[in-house]
Amino acid sequence: MRTEVIVHLEMGETSRKLAGRYRLLNPLGEGSVRLAFDEPGHRDVAVRQLRIPAELHDAALRRARRAMELRHASIVRVLDVVVEDGTPWLVMEFVAGSSLEQTVRSRRPLPIMQAARVGVGALSALTVAHAAAIVHGHVEPGNVLLTRTGRAVLTGFGLPSRSTWPSADLWSLGATLHFALEGRPPGQSPAEGPDPLRSLIRAMLHPTGPPPVEVIRETLERLALDQPLDLLIESLGPLPPAEVAAIGLAAMDRLQRGIHGGVQPGNVLIDAHGRATLLPSLRSGTLPAYTAPEGVQSPAADLWSLGATLFAAVEGTPPAPGAPLGRAGPLAPILFRLLSGDPTDRPSLDELRRELGSVAGN
Image 1: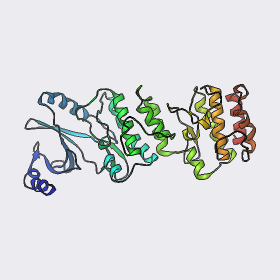
Image 2: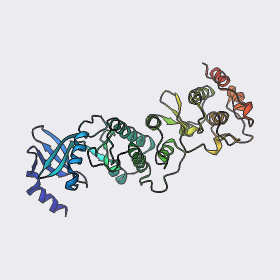
Image 3: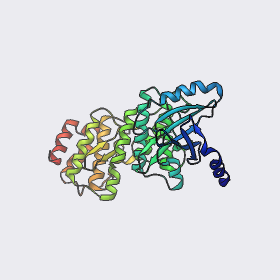
Image 4: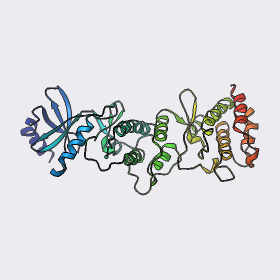
């Protein structure tokens, strides 16, 4: 069968030109996209035939021509829209690389940091498109291309859309990231796991709709560059009290905005310079070891969870009844107050900031 296709291309299709300029060459992958050579432009392009009913041609052409206006480093540009013998074709920028679907199926699911980088690129593309009132409608692993340098670009703009709602694109992005991490679509049972990316994906797939775009963007951008505190503890062991105090101060910046409800080491990211960021809370909740004993979300419960997080950072394990504070040093009295079973005994944010600042050397 493969030989027959190649012979057919050599004898007929390779001599065919669209609009008198795009010479058709070989198929790209297993889909309907073909490599072509733009003779006047002296460049490779990708072309795709739009197989749609004749009565939808006009609407499809309008949508495709609107997509030509999109410009972004993470968008595969639509360069031209051609109608040949009554059939519309998209002419697109040629990007060398493999689709996310091919990459995962031929190798293995992506590590969290690489999957987050894919999400950053795809979300950037969707943000630009949505700002122009263009919904992609086909966000899926086969339409995310990974270049040879690892950059993710989104193709498929200009195709007839399956939806007119930007939220549908965000749901599809969540499903695509799920595939990148797990090697399968989410189905009815998205992957469990306390790590921030899986928590984000579950939130993006939630029936009530995705989190705000700003929350999705911040989480992906941080995960693409920074390391969660729980993995840092796992790899390095307990951290020095002054560094842990600085982590606590950074986390407090988020707590001042209101009830968080998800303070735990997996939601604290550390960058290459040791600076910490507490990610926004998602719907996943807090792990039992970091949940305040009163069992309700409140500012005081967030302080208890912060104390448990700092305990784990300085001692190497989460707190447990009777667990000693052998490494905390000057942090010990602060942690005792934060982990009090009585919420009224916990310090205020102002008190905590002064005390942690003293330990951190600020």
